[in-house]
Image (tube, rainbow, N blue to C red):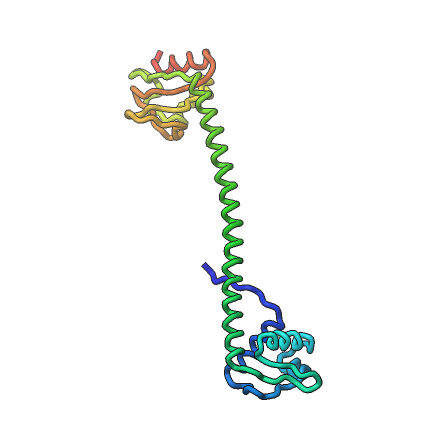
Length: 207
């Protein structure tokens, strides 16, 4: 799974960069750093973005902004704590974003499950309805169907009856594969009109 990331505002990125410089000793506690215009040029951003970044750091007591004077570094420890707390916030945001994605995926899967369940219920209801009118027909040793697959026999085209299951070698096959080869003794579970079933019985018997 790819690591999730959370987008942060540009001024927040600048605040993290400044705090990082303070932690690394680029700026010392008590030092007055350049004005907004100079910082804007250094980071290639607008003075307004710098103002927001400094305001954020000031709220965390990392710096203090003195009007018409400059920005003074207050605490390296506060800068470190700011970075740590922001990383924790980003991680939490990533987890929340992942949770939203998983919830959305779960809802999609649940909807798909409900659709499949409805289809299964509908299919089984149709099978039961057909089976109520179904007839079991056993293939005799003289049946011309022996040795041929269901597809080759073309039973539906020839008789009009539909084979919905086959008992082959002591095992029932519901909706049997078209390649299933019929042999004497197989039982065909078929549905259709009386005429269609009568024709199928004749073929099964070999008469």
